[in-house]
Length: 114
Length: 112
Image 1 (cartoon, rainbow over the protein chains, first blue to last red):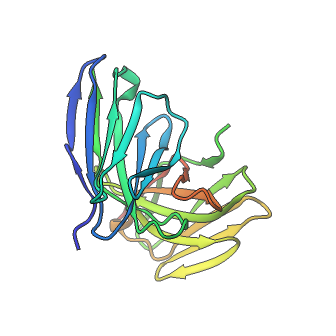
Image 2: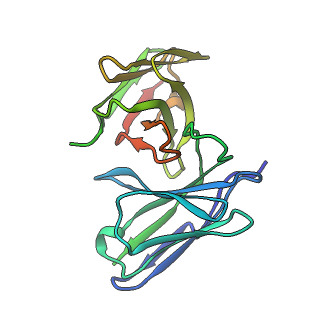
C-alpha cells in the first residue's frame, strides 16, 4: 500500500512569492492534515480537510490556505511568502472516521524562502 | 508557555540501555496521547497510541500516561542503534480531530 506522497520535496522561493504544495493521501483515507515543522516551534497544526471540507484550522494567518479534491488529494498554498515561512511542511492522512489522532505522515516538502 | 513541553536533549545512551523519554502538558482536556518517531529527513511515524491514563506495551516500547500529573512517558528497552531518531510526543482533546499538539521532540542517539 503506497504511503502519503508529497510534492515537491524541496523548493526555494523568494519573499513575496506564493507557493503551492501537493499531497496524495493513502488510498482510502479521506482526511488530510497539514503541519508546519520548524526548529523553533516544532510541529504546528495548520488545517485538516475531510471530504473536501475544512474541518479544523490552526492558528496561522490567512496567507495559509488549503483545499481538498474529490479524490482526497490536497493542496496547500502560502501567499506573500515571508522569511519565517521557511519550514518543512508535512501532510498526514487518516481514514477520518474517528478522531483518535492516529496520523500517517508523508516525508514533507522543505520550503526555503530567501 | 506551550501546552506540551518536551526536553529536546540530545540524549545519548549505549546500546542495550533502557531509555526514558518524557513530556508534560498543561491542558487537562487532552485524552489521546501518542509517540511519534522521526528519522532525519523523514516524516514522523506513529509508535504508540494511548487513550486516557494507563500503560501500553508493544514489543520493546512501553507508553505510560499519568493524567493526574499531566505527564507521559515512553520507555525503550534494549535500545538499538536503529532507535536513534527524534521522538515526538503528541496529544489531543476529544473532538479536536487531527489537530494534534506536539512536543518539540527529543533527539536520541544509541551508540554501539
